[in-house]
Length: 192
Image (cartoon, rainbow, N blue to C red):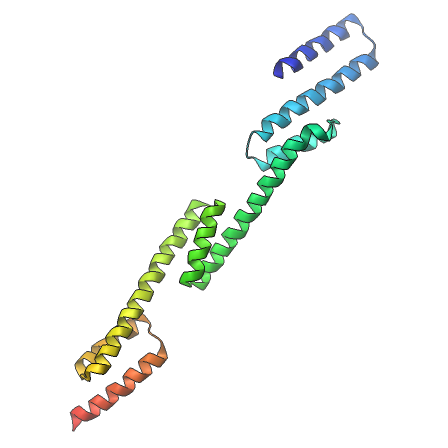
């Protein structure tokens, strides 16, 4: 195709030198512009560059290239724009999931983001946060188990230690309140 434009450009230059009428030369130059626009469109459509394809489509329309010749590039542009919209939506969902900090929400957002091709750094950061959330959940679960065992064992030393661990793990107030009440009872017993 590049050869075609070269041949046509050379023919136009030869026609101008030979004194061919202006109307014929303008018509040939119009065809040359369309041919170059078609080539530019084909090259742009072979990329994943939304702005390049958009510019090539705009140029093709400007020079009057028939829509049938730009259909493939137009479809590719629409597909790339849909993918970009999905990638953006997934990146936003990932950022929101990181703020909210729930394991299930973050896990799903990471999977969606990876599938949509979201920036690797964002996904890495989310995965790191997910590891922290899993670790925190494990520590809370371990602390609650230790607290329940200490309450069942009816030993003040175990209960005091388990309450410290539960506080560090950020265990919920309800579980803590029951254990604190039990600690008070055990302390009263020891004082007797």
